[in-house]
Length: 334
Image 1 (cartoon, rainbow, N blue to C red):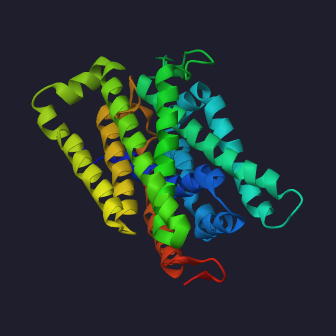
Image 2: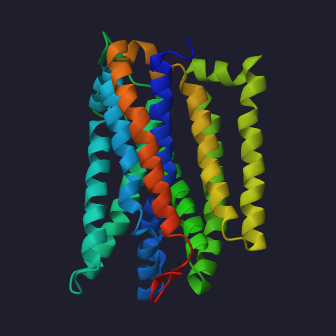
């Protein structure tokens, strides 16, 4: 059963969402940090560091959302009505952010307006993604295979906390990305920011992790009942090791290791969410098998996906390889 088509597709969707989070997360983080730039040159460096890759990073959001519609239509039909407002707000923020990114370099008079739009769009998109995650964790009311909750069920202290946690986490990713891609005063400022943001992010992850098992009794059982807890203990142990790696590499002045540590912190957090959710795709009551399309549809779409995903990974990796190295304030990459 663990290797049937719905399970395989759940893994593909999870991979797409995780890839989106860690890739678009750092460029959203650059936008969140944008107001802290001390000069026009710093602002240009920050934007140039993500210019070659930011729009390609959002490919994975399309794959995750489109894949959910195609292979788990019941989950799509339940999640969208439950989370219309945060999802639409996120999409509008991403659109406005993209417009601001392109228009900032083509105007002088309106440049400050587009800079505010870039930063605000990044922060709002990150906040809405965190709220969406929190709403899924706290559970969606389902009756007769349809959403049965209210318009504002997604809004709670817990979802606001998860939203702020994602904003802080993305800012951490953005700061460590800029450590990797820049030099001089901007890089040093980002080292200082990364230390502070690392503390905030890990405190937020710890708080959300403590509160999550109390959102549903099944979460508590998965994390704290033997023998399952012997396996789930790997998550906090891995997080402790990554915490050491993050702060030790920042203190030692490494360029790449803080970014790698930040990415892995998100990966481990995502694994923790997966442990809480599985086997449900719409907590607490709709499993991946109940939400899946017919096997014939899953098989047909799987063939195309097995060809498409390596292609996306290939051109994404090539883009990052071409634009490797630091950003030169005068010339671009060097």
